[in-house]
Each structure stands twice: as C-alpha cells, then as structure tokens.
Length: 471
Image (cartoon, rainbow, N blue to C red):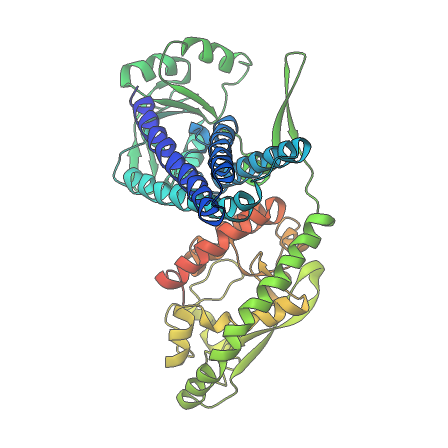
C-alpha cells in the first residue's frame, strides 16, 4: 500500500508538470502567431491549433505510458518514451494537417516541438533528482523480501546496494535451505525470515511491498505461478531476477506462444547502420569539442612546460577494436621518465587484475594531478575520435600488456572501439575492481544505444566536476 501511495503522488506531480510544459509552449507559440497575424480569422485558427497540439501531445504522453511506475526514475527509458511520444504526436498532426490541407502547424513544429521536448526532459530530470534524493533518505522505496539460494540472494542484494537509484529496501530473505544464519552483504546483516515456500505469508506479516525471486526451489516448476496466486489482492509486486539480464538486459523480450512464455534474446550486432550512425555522431561531436580544446591547449601546454621538463603531449600505445594498436594522445601528467620508473613501483600496485594504479603515484606532476582530477588530460583524445581510433563513448582503452591476460570473455571488450568515457568512468573510474570494470564494459559493448551514450556523456560531465575516483 505504501508503494502505491507514493507512486500515485509522484505520477500526479509528473502529470501536472507535463501539462504545464506542453500547454505553456503550445499556447505561447499560438500567442506568437497571434502577434504576427492580426486578422481575426487567423488569430482564432492559431489558438485552435495550439489547443489541438497540446491535447494530442498530452494524450500521446499518456498512451505511451511515460508515467508508468516501471519507468519512474529510470532515466534513459523514461526520456526515450517522452521523445517517442512527442515525435509520434507531431507526426500524427503533420499527416492530419497535410491530408486536410489545414494551415497553422508550421510554427508549432518549429518552436513548440523542440522547446516543449526540452522543457519536458528538464522537468523529468529535476523530478528524477528529487526522487533519487528521497530514496537515499528512505522515502519512495518498496520494502522487499528476497527469495532464493543464499548465493543468489547475496548476488541480488549486492547489486541493489551498489545502485543508489533503485527503489527497493531489503527487509529480509527466505532461502531454499535450512540455514537460518543472517546473510551479510557489505557489512550489513539481512535476517532469514523463513523457508522460500513461506515467502507469501512472510511478506504479508512484514508488510512487504515487493517480493524479489532470485532463484527457484529445486524441482518446483510451478513455484512462481503459485506465488502469484497467493499474492492476489495484496499490494506486493512480484519481481523475477535472472542473471541473463546482467549483460543481455536491453535485448530481452517476452514472447508468449500459446501460453508458453518464451524469453527472446536478440543476438548482439557489431556492424550495420546503428554503428554507422554512432560513427557519424562521433565525428560531429569531436569536431565541435575540438574547437574549445584548441583554444585552451596553449594555456595547458604552457603550465605543463613551466611545471616540469618534457613534452606537452604523451602518446601511449593502446589496443582498439579487433585488437588493432593505435597511439592514444593525452596531455602529459607524469615526469618524462615515468615509463622507466614503472617497474620499480610494481610492488606498490593498488590496481586489481592486470591494471596498474597508485592512488599517490610519485611520478605524477603537480599540474598533472590537477589535470587528472578533472579529466582534462584526456581532451586530446578527441583527435583519436576524429581519425577513427576511438569513440566518444565506449569501453576503457586497454594497454597491450593487459590484453595478453584477457580470457575469451574479457576479449569481447575489443568488439567495438574504446571510448574517451564510458560506464566505467561514470561508475567509479579507478575505484572500481577489475571484475566490476569488465562487467560494465561487456554490458556496454552488447547493449549500447545513442540514448545511453548521451546519458553517459551527461553523467561524465558531473563526474568530472566531482573528480571521484580520478587518480
């Protein structure tokens, strides 16, 4: 019941701000048309068009379920639905006005569409920030019980704890074995409230808003069906967790076939039109980014030269798509003899896996520390993007020595071009473990989209300012 209350309250707020944005820009555009055309007939027509645009737009936002609980605070999915609904609304109106030869839509297309879409996205972003803040304080969350084997329950809880945006707070677990010892995750204890078969009753007793099934009991194929029946009439939602979604999540769809639920997993593609579109976006963005970069490069070069002896730029061999080597450019942040001193520091390595990292690397110069803190040392990599060695968003570009230690799974990172930024950078950068870095890279490689790229770029700007995990 608590979940339904905060969801309804949040959706009413979204509906109100959506209406203000859509009606505001539509009527403002209509008013602008009124000031341009002074005849009474055209004034009346302009306002009628504004009302029609606003009504159609709001209807499509509702029909496309942009305020559905499943996408509340989800970021890219929510924004994509808003963009699709907006495009569909104006597409329908354009065809209608074209067929009926009606005037008055042109100004709405030129002004109201981009302004309204921007207003909607900004308002949703602000509401999402407020929702995340409330969830960190324990509000607007669902009290959840997790069911499954101890290993699977621990896996689910650890992922929920890692993501500050999720809407679940685990209040207990039920397991498939007789062990009643609490489950420890990140220093916190989660009580075992009973066997998995009793989870519906335990959920009612605890007032849980959600049940998350991490794994099923052995030899009980009807467990989920019975559980859904037992939860009828309650406010609890049933969530099924599968490790298949760890990498393939966006490529999963449910396809019922005569009552048989088939999970369809689309095979990832690494060629084709979407990759051509990604390359076109890279060229355009890198070209624009290089304009201010070229303006500030002389200043950065001057402070680097004044701080220490050596070249302004540092060129390092990295491995790109399909294992091809290229020279990655950076502003020099270390002493000129940094490579020669590397072996003497191996014993102090704080990195995981094949990565070498030192939180207080003695080879880093004073200016270099500042450049690294705000990721300014990586700005020359936009030249690598322009010539095609890298992408704006992608997996972390590895060193040749790291690649020699890759197994068959990790080598999938090389299926697309490495990026200046990526999930690894907006999720912790150097603070990530090797396993976590690989997991994020593989998830991006197989599931990237232009929408997710734009989201990562936006989050990168915030990470650069915060400088978390940069050393």
